Image (cartoon, rainbow, N blue to C red; front, side, top):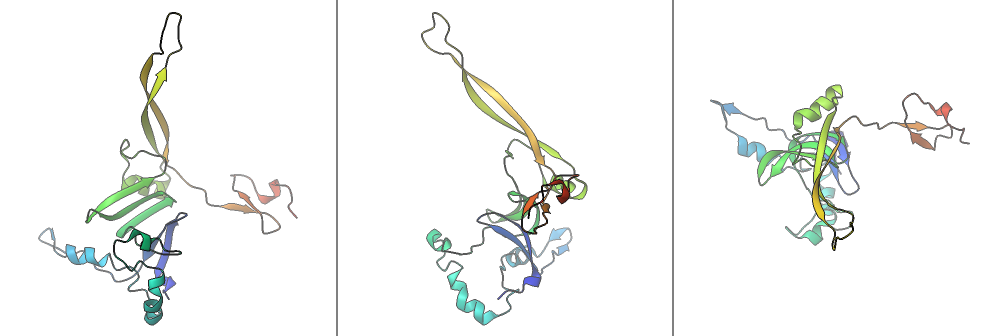
Length: 208
């Protein structure tokens, strides 16, 4: 139904997947320092699968079983094996599932969106260039999460109630780092083990 030579899988999760689609291209045109075809450019980003369909008749007959047919109906969007467009944009870099940068629409405007699992982006200044630097040269970017915690003091002699005070807790972690996606395949060609630098399949017990 779709020309898979024009689709490239970027990253996915249990209930989502991001694909790069090589469909119709509209280049940005500038005149006198002004972007003159902005509306045409942005409208083209909503093309979906329109320009990569191989069998239009088959697509038209079966799309209703997968795509929502009632605009704004959340129940219709969640049909079994259904598909709905969550984000559409013109640029994306993915390090792993739930760790990516995308230039997409928010409130009808193209804007930079970064998702980093476990990192509070409101408290950390992490941008597109940090993601690119990690891909290009392995630069590690750290992030710090801050939260407030309530701690109570132990009751002392003569106290009638516990005393509480607020404490600021800081947790520093690697926000952008390399990811290892290799596996060690054992001799039976069926069992796999996590890749550890310096270890080969011979380092593990023979699995028959």
